[in-house]
Image 1 (cartoon, helix red, strand yellow):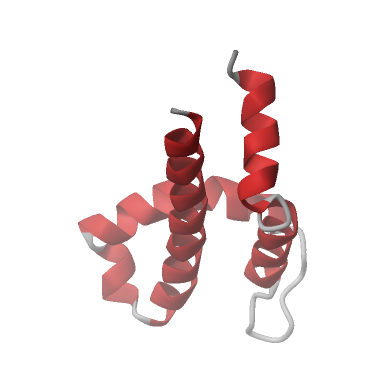
Image 2 (cartoon, helix red, strand yellow):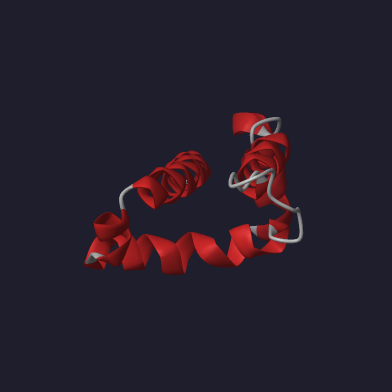
Length: 93
């Protein structure tokens, strides 16, 4: 049971990372952000990305998503399967 939960959690973390990357790339295609899928992904990832909006852009390039992805990977990926197992063992009985 715990292995199934760990696998699902790992897939969700990876899916969220792909959603962030999709949102960043969709900034180059404005109609994509205006679509229903684009708005849904924006509602999903923008709260996390907004934490990094204090970083000033370099010219016309917003570098805050780079820091958002780096922090996300720094926090999530070192945990890996074993780290998620440890965290879920604290939560689940």
